[in-house]
Amino acid sequence: MQRFIDSISSPLLFVLVLVSCASRGDFPVLEGPYLGQNPPGLTPEVFAPGIISMAGRYEGGATFSQDGQLFIYKRFYREKPDPEEIWLSELQDGRWTPPFRPSFDGEYGDWDFHFAPFGRRFYFTSRRPAVLQGATARPSNIWVTERVPSGWTEPRLLEYPVNTVDSYSGFPSLTRDSTIYFHSERDDGFGEVDIYRARRADGKYLTAEPLPPPVNTEYREFDPCIAPDESYLLFISNRPVDNGPEYDTFITFRSADDSWSEPQGLWNTLGYAGLPNITPDGQLFFFVGGQPDSSQTADIYWVDTRIFDQFRPEPRP
Image (cartoon, rainbow, N blue to C red; front, side, top):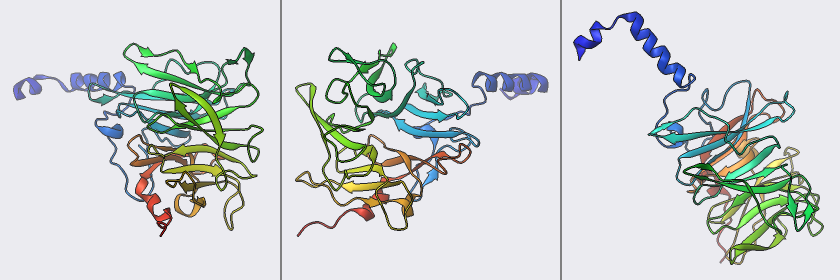
């Protein structure tokens, strides 16, 4: 073997290396869970720096499928008419593919998405034309597609009452039993935008209800991220907070009687933390960090969800 290697000239070796790199578009060989990245501890870290999180670009919305073999995130380009693009990397033959645009992300604008904590179902918000109960709905609704051996299924509009004709719905987040949390602006809410929940029964979503105070208020509550076991909820709000930013990410815990603890702001722990997402196993938290008004300093961050244990309310006596 060594004689064979020694017999190859340096120029030929150089050509072989170039061909190998070109075939992957300079994307490195990544193997193992989470694109081969070592999971973080209790201090937030940039996810895949120089690979996924790139300088001079806005990345966010990171989400993994339940089997850990699909990774989807978004790139944001301020100079484009449709600034948000969905990108996918897939674990194939033990290696992660260079990111590419999935077939379902088309001309209409798709954003604010999550993989369900089961199977390979992908829920997302879209401006694509939607008809509900025989009428044209406002252009912001929740859709679902699924990764199957032949590719992605045709996106399907979620039925009423998750989507409604005269209000928008977005930022879907699901529990293991298919309960869906999302934000919407409806007449039965508490403020301009509120967080809603719909439980599934007999294969359908029958009702959608706004979460009660102290989750929803007269202010804006949006971008909900529910833990897979429904034990706690993360969301963003502009409710007043002493010495806090205009918008902060909050955490609230659900009790056995379905009540919610007083939401606590995470600014001092995470800084800016937009587009929250919890992995299907409930162990890792992804978010976009940096400066939301600058595409040069907004990257994907991740941290162990045990960081939230410090906010859990004391057990009731």
